[in-house]
Amino acid sequence: MAAETEIHPVSTSVEWLARFAGTDLEDLCCATEEAIVDGNGFGWLKPPPREKLEAYWRGVLLVPERELVVARYDGTIVGSAQLVRPPANNEAQAFAAMITTFFVAPHARGHGLARGLLQAIDRRAAERGFEAIELNVRDTQKAAIALYESHGFVRWATKQKYAKVDGKFIVGHYYVKEIMPIGKTALERAREASPASVTPIVRRP
Ligand SMILES: CC(C)(COP(=O)(O)OP(=O)(O)OC[C@H]1O[C@@H](n2cnc3c(N)ncnc32)[C@H](O)[C@@H]1OP(=O)(O)O)[C@@H](O)C(=O)NCCC(=O)NCCS
Image (tube, protein in one colour):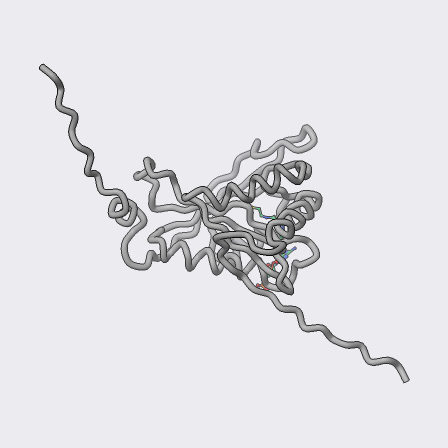
């Protein structure tokens, strides 16, 4: 009689991260390295030394304009996305947030994690009062482009010299998705958080 194959149900989740616990940082670095080797490293062409990668991810959690959402596969971090808001001085563009470092490690793809990351980003961006989410992507990232378009992102521009890989220019595309802010807009929130209560300088005669 043939031995029965035990089916191990996969657990997947998506979570906003404020600090790294346990092996989170190491796992995120491993996933990043896998994604870079696979062909998309959000800028990196080859995996940087591990200390540099760790410093990068630690830095992300320290930057007030950035929020990090991660995808877990059986508890291990296998992917990420960041919601990045414009700097405080850029009131004119305070309505739009941006997505960056969006990826799922090759071994964990096809389980809906990327879709889950985008849904979490949509929710968080609306809660923060944003009216649009923007992103850009290389033309070579066909899976990501298919996902973005099925998720409501609209292409508004294409840049011929978007990236340079192995001496060759790669085309890139710019996308936007309009969303409905929940409550106050991002600009109203920013103004409330730091009211313009600067004491005027009195010039000496
Ligand atoms: C794009 C990427 C994040 C998708 O990750 P994933 O976890 O496999 O995606 P999901 O399982 O959530 O699938 C999401 C949808 O995309 C579709 N999809 C996934 N791979 C696809 C492909 N190669 N071609 C077409 N559609 C694809 C799925 O069918 C799914 O659609 P559905 O929700 O309607 O069923 C992953 O391939 C990746 O990390 N690519 C490299 C990094 C990258 O390109 N990032 C973008 C930089 S801007």
